[in-house]
Length: 131
Ligand SMILES: CC(C)(COP(=O)(O)OP(=O)(O)OC[C@H]1O[C@@H](n2cnc3c(N)ncnc32)[C@H](O)[C@@H]1OP(=O)(O)O)[C@@H](O)C(=O)NCCC(=O)NCCS
Image (tube, rainbow, N blue to C red; front, side, top):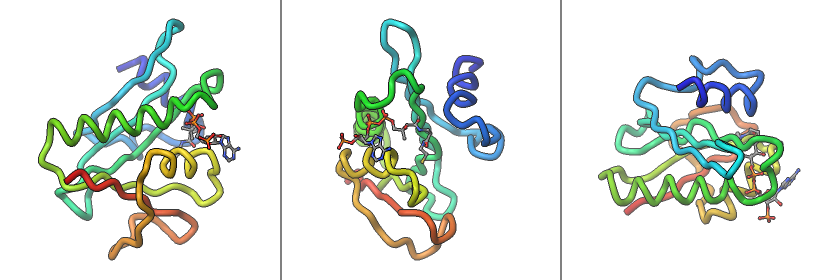
């Protein structure tokens, strides 16, 4: 857990773990021969209970630009298809976060317009249907 908190702090220095990571959070971690280099978090979505919410994804500076984020997103979705009955994974990304927007587009997620907003207007909502 300490290693996860360290990864989180390195990629989200301004966000408090407690405000983002829920009690039922599932972590998927990417490593190379130097150790952990990235992570993605799935947790039950508050507004659509049969969906997962992807609440955080982070890749260490030294591992950026190697499609680690894309591999993490795809692996988490594959795991969810094989191991859960959930309908979809939803998330949102700040419209100003180019690398993150590209990661979800590259991973084949659809942009959608939720009936209830999880966040404000300066974000792009993404969804991956699982079945
Ligand atoms: C967002 C983040 C997870 C992406 O990780 P990554 O492993 O470097 O991403 P990838 O290597 O898969 O790159 C994704 C795409 O973004 C592109 N990209 C990289 N930097 C970019 C930039 N500044 N502007 C636009 N696109 C950029 C890459 O070229 C790649 O696109 P391509 O496949 O067409 O070449 C990582 O930058 C990070 O941890 N950022 C800090 C935390 C954060 O913002 N998380 C997301 C919150 S929603």
